[in-house]
Image (cartoon, rainbow, N blue to C red; front, side, top):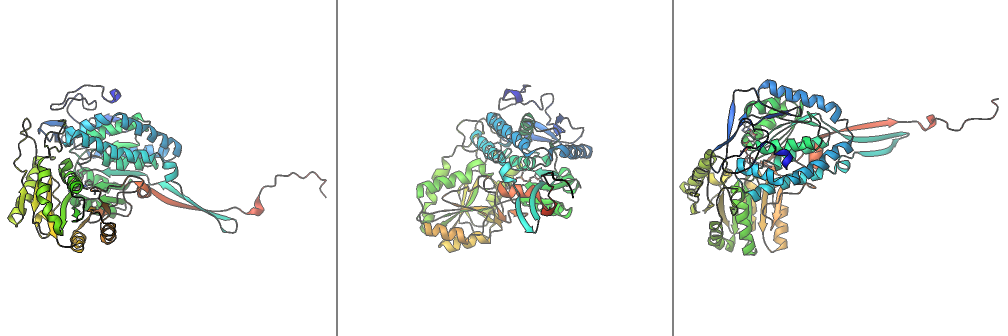
Length: 519
Ligand code: NAD
């Protein structure tokens, strides 16, 4: 850890060090293997969500800086795309160890800039680390196919070859996991990269690229630019960038998918969600309510796989008071306080939006059975805190149901049958995740067969697949053909090349020299 934390700068509210912004409270760009100060005059402030103190200032990279990042990636591509697959694998072996060794430092910077609890921040790193570990299997994952003898003396081989310079655009809610869904997969396949972190949580990405350099990744193979719309448009339009991975909201994701695709790029776009948890009356009540509370309010509800909607079937609706009791017990505090269950939301604007969506539910006829909007956290009065909030009697036509709230708010609906629950979920525009809680296997089987959602949990509230599978959100939650990480991720970051070769058996060089007298 000490290697990354050379120059000390104590940050208010949380004591730790960062080396890449020691001289001035600005975040650097990372171009051609060097941390460089941007020449821009435009910066965005990054705040600690627990205090709203400024932590760092993020530059909006200039066009020249972004172009130099692409030039560095193009130059590095020449050697990196031809480096042996074993050499790229070795970088990943070292990288996964460095991430493991520095997990606490990474978690601290996540908590500082994003607000989630330290335990949750470590989980954020761990889920990204698993993708890096999976990348270590690239020698099996990138195998092509071969078919000998497709005609006389002719064989065909297919290869998975890199695309070239690729790019990633990330959201604020998982500052480690989502960047690690992107550049490690691209790099290990032989591509080079332009990465744009969320302008709200740049710090973790900077540590991650420094560790990648330390792991032996050559200069220029990964480059980090910062910014908002201009940086996104640059990535969508630059003719040297071949593919874009995006994770974030629907408004940005649909825009990037369209603009990038129009420019001939391959785009994968993971977007918003409204994940429903179906509670059957035969479910194990205690564990179901515990899981619901964790999945609805953990990370202050700012997970794309948060269970933000509960659908109680039949008698299960009588469990609502017990659910409220459990939610009330959660401790809301700054993320670095040891016993915090949930931290603040990302910004005052996010808090305001969450509160107004709760109010819209009340105005449209829902009941607010737990109201966390006016919570005050002693010592952190200026933070963006929202306590666990539960709306009941919600109907599918209400704004609080239709919109992704992205805060610690659980909306609950009641229906009479499993079929009705399935119908509600299949009518919702999103298809990211869902879960059913039941002790009946036949009920679970019917649900998994009939539900039109990409990631389904049975007694598992947040069914995010490990990287031997892929992240398979669907419908309004995804645009593209190949999903993130796993085999689909390798497919996304490679293109097929098929080689058909003819070598006539009759042309084999004779190896036996004639010794007899020619006649
Ligand atoms: P966001 O869309 O605001 O930002 C994501 C990225 O897009 C950032 O890098 C930002 O700079 C850029 N961006 C923002 N607005 C833009 C615009 N109008 N035009 C071009 N670029 C723009 O998302 P966020 O608030 O950082 O993240 C929360 C959202 O991400 C939620 O909707 C959540 O469900 C979603 N999310 C989805 C997944 C998934 O895998 N499906 C995972 C995590 C988060």
